[in-house]
Picture 1: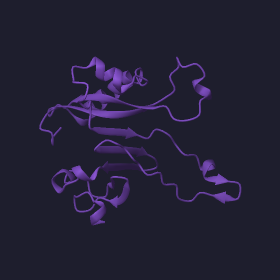
Picture 2: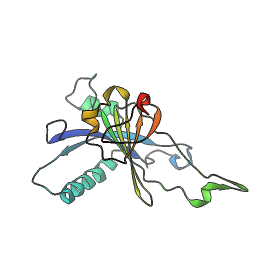
Picture 3: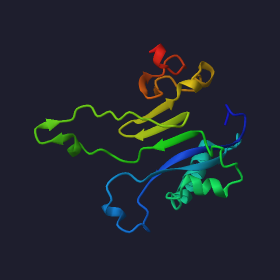
Amino acid sequence: AHHSSTDDVVFGAAFSGRPPELEGAGCIVGHFVNNLPVRARISIAGSLVEFVRQMHGQFAQLAEHQSTSLSDIQSSSELPWNARLFSTLLVFQNYVVSEAATHLGDVAITALHAPVRTNYPLTLVVNPSATLSLTLVAQPHITNNSAAAAVPPGTTAACGDQDVGSVCDGGVATPGSR
């Protein structure tokens, strides 16, 4: 909100779940992931706790519509058909990889790394494991020092399809500056 100079912002949020109305959904292999637009009104006078509670309630309501296609949402909106509903995406990883999944007989998986790829200019991936991990994925054309100054040092960042390590000195690393 601060960088867009407005207290009313829309971002995308990834939802995953099997639609109960889909017969046999429990037997289908693969992910059921959909991105939905989320509208956030940010009050400077409000507290962070109030904002998080508001967002939690809104996400709970959106979960009922997690199978709705973006094209259906777009056709119900006042935006032109060729306008993006959102250009940033929030992904909250809500799954845990069990210790048992890292061992296959005598073979052990010691470093599991799944690169994040997205077609959105900016994506924030939140991974609540033993420690909270935030990964910022930015396409190179939007990565600049002024936009990256808001990124906390030490936050993991990625640029385009390449993992670029950590954010250093308040800037997001780009492939040419690694």
